[in-house]
Image 1 (cartoon, helix red, strand yellow):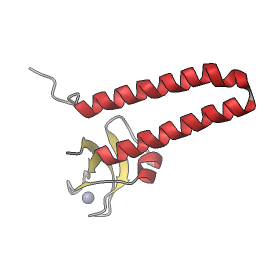
Image 2: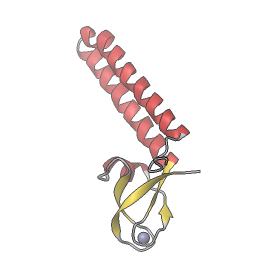
Image 3: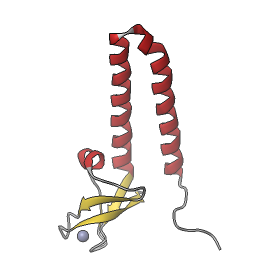
Length: 110
Ligand SMILES: [Zn+2]
């Protein structure tokens, strides 16, 4: 018997690689930029913000959500992706079809 709960998809791998690169960029940036003082710290902060924006943008275009109430599948925008409470595989969202707030299941978009 296979565990079919959540298969690792190509998207999950891309997410992992992106997160690793982001962590590396922040780390390496920190080593080189922090000793430069105020402006260096500011630049590092910029890298962190930029990475976060890229990640959330990519995430919001790569995944959609299924309402627990009516099974409707819907997309969310950047802000909802960033600010809605979430678990590993669900997100607390208002369904655009039935208007109910549920822990919608995250699914990879095709
Ligand atoms: Zn719904």
